Length: 258
Image 1 (cartoon, rainbow, N blue to C red):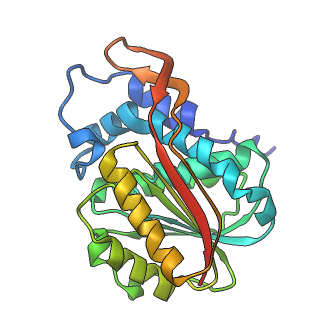
Image 2 (cartoon, one colour):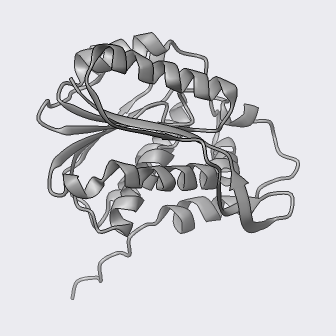
């Protein structure tokens, strides 16, 4: 008799919540989430401190993409500066929650931290099973964004590309124009670009500059943005409990055909 099918892994309960249990307070500095993580303990602390913010900002953004229109279509997911691939995990979780079934042909995870990248690969494998294709290719690229080149990617022009930028465009350690050139030259076809971040001035400025590069040189459609704060359940480490908290955010997303 075969074993019953494994219950679907969910991001909030299975990945985020377990990392909030043993958070130290005060905790080691993670440079407001910008540090390149060095070990398992730092990875767990990052998820415990910031995982809920990633989750809620992305869940708020995803309805604007109308993923139901991608049902049964081949898609590629590119998670830039992915850390532990939280954005990809939340996207897969969103697909499951809403019974969307695009064909995830490939996932590309780009990250300079080896330990975070390894964990991200494992998390994505957990999230994909058993409700998504076991044939999905997951590629890890252990590089900083500025060091990427064309040979690091393999993209099919007929696939829909979903580019995830979760709390990364605002990091001032790479050149936006160089990233833009890489995308327009490599990812031909339909591209959905989703940028979420905190509502800091630097984040808003860099995301807007990134968007403006596309509208100057390409046809951009289905563009939307928001800076409205959201109020959702997150873990407050000082109080050691989950509460409804205010999450500041800046979001901009758009589709471009290249």
